[in-house]
Amino acid sequence: MSRLTSGWDVGRSLGRCSITGAQLEQGARIVAALVDDPTSAAGLRRVEISEAAWDSGRRPEQIFAFWKTEVPIAGAKRRAFVDDGALLDLFDRLGNDDRPHRVGFRFVLMLLLVRKRLLRVIGQRDGGASECWIVTPKGAQEGDPGIEVVNPKLDENAMREITEQLGEVLDGEWS
Image (cartoon, rainbow, N blue to C red):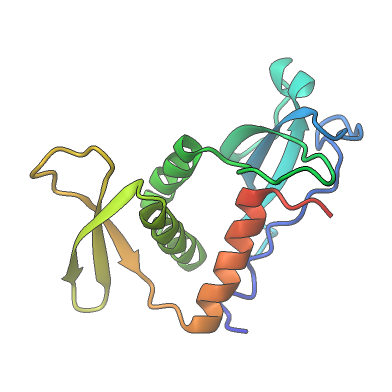
């Protein structure tokens, strides 16, 4: 495992509200959040907050991104844990962060958004030390200059590990 990918564990759900400690029951409305965590090699940690705690204003510090969802029901067909708007918001928030693990995370997220047809690749730029992919959001106007996304040139193992970690964060795996 490379140094870049060895710190991508943002945690799995503990099935408890991170604010109140109460058990999160199947089907319950919750807020899932990524919070800045300097003790984590990834720099982010995933937490879940009950809707009641969130609505009362009790929230974790250092929120990087959040989305509303429901605790999965055992045996029910899985559905997307994060909606398209939250994915695009997370992509935008990562745009000003040049830490290597977040650059890799943003690149893999960009590939996911291209696959979902929420972003479209319109070109590439080779800036010497770094290569950038240029993308535009769905519905962008003709002539839009696009958004540059650094290609961290991840090897196959790094790409697979980041993809798995992104899946854990976005699909809301519950152990």
